[in-house]
Amino acid sequence: MRNKHAPTKSSVDSNVARIDTVVFVGSPLIFSEWVLRSAISEVGHMDVLRFDTPSAANLINLANDRCIKLIVLEDVHAADLIHQIESFRAVAGLTIWAVAYRDVSSGRAFFKRRIESDVLSDLRLLSMNVPIDVWTSMFRLALYGDYIIPCELMITQEGYLTAPPPLTASTSARQILTKREVEVLSLVSRGDCNKTIAHDLGLSEHTIKLHMHHILNKIGASNRTAASSWYLSQNGSL
Image (cartoon, rainbow, N blue to C red; front, side):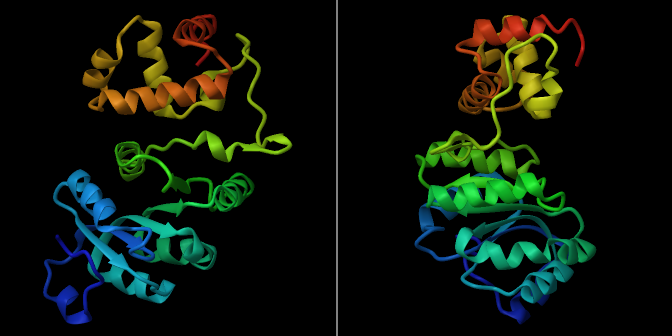
């Protein structure tokens, strides 16, 4: 497996400068061999590294030698490290950050922080409780700058953390959907099937299904037809 564990300083220096790299921070019990192999299958030419418990300083040092594309933090380490995002970005640029969680209450706490903080507004959230094919799709979205919010994070005992928007023509899709979700819904409203949409957007059919699942939950639609009708009723107000 390519660079599964944290390299020594000398091994980093011997690599070609600024190799594109994905970094996992956490226990092998969370980021198992299976998870890392799935990540490697998605990253193409990039290296994949895992650290058990690195400090922010170690990540910044690594960024001096490598181009860090994505950092995935186990939730138990994330609380300390995400405070260093701005310092890290001053060195490494716009690296994508994600928090991986198993405890839903922990995931909800980070989702709440994401909502309340401008610095964390681009934080991705990856559930480690889903089948590996679903996790791989979510990882792929995070890697290339897109994201979905697992529905389990939006619901508490009191209801939604952020109330689902009413299904009205006056609500703009861009207010509540990601750019990719708008693209998917636009093609759905045109009558395209998942296979055609996947081909047009360069994604897998499974990823399109994930997007549609989240679109329906976000806009409160019961099916594709209702979602398409809502989208078309906006008459170009996007």
